[in-house]
Image (cartoon, rainbow, N blue to C red; front, side, top):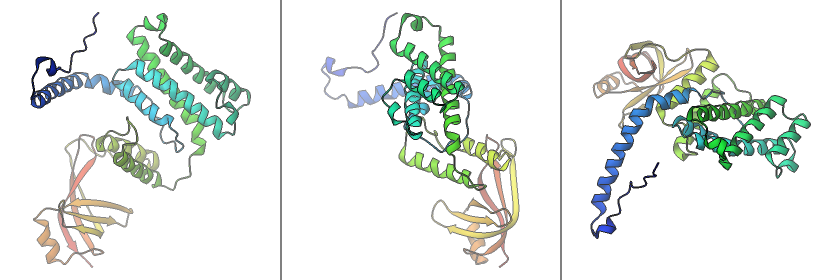
Length: 320
């Protein structure tokens, strides 16, 4: 089977001076080709994502987290060789990090084989964790050495090995580092997750982070359920939800986008409500300002995740 490496066209060979527009045209064509591939593969990508197990929140992180995230994304895209190689490197870094944290700096420069054996001998890791480390090490070595046995594996078998490596390493990470988790007050875990997401979006900390606000909403739903025992997916897609209550005005912003922040003291929650031009005269006529107490009716239409998204003002009355 031939290797075709001919995507980028070399216009210099044709002695064409003005090539910028031609190159941009070719890039646009490749974007279209890539989008077609994504669209045709999207169901498979999502199914593979669902084969990766969740482990919840672990506070303690090291550089190995960036590799685990890339391995997960690589697996979702069907790049099994890459995901196995990444997990293998992440596994060694995680093990070194944990050994140092346990005060065994002398194990840092040892091989992964010797390091895991010694940690097991010292009683620092369980037999189960040791076996998972060793299994990942063997698969990773076969992959990097690319021996005949590994080359001849069918793609379905390679897929299973890649998934097992990722899930085993994540379970190791959860078992070894969950004990370092801080003690949270109710609701503070969700707050910390929101703050962490904001940092990821601002700093692009690593490839494979939370993709966008859409995926973040899915994660927030998970954490809200784990903390409060309630699913914030409250209705079917496209359902209109109305909320009526006594609120305190926390903020008013008349710059675009125009918004009003309402605080519900009965449940201790804030909600940001989008304002329209039609709402402004009502606020002005009633002299509604920050710290005013109001009775308000707000509405939202649930998105495709069954979660309320943008809130809009239906009625508002100042009471004090």
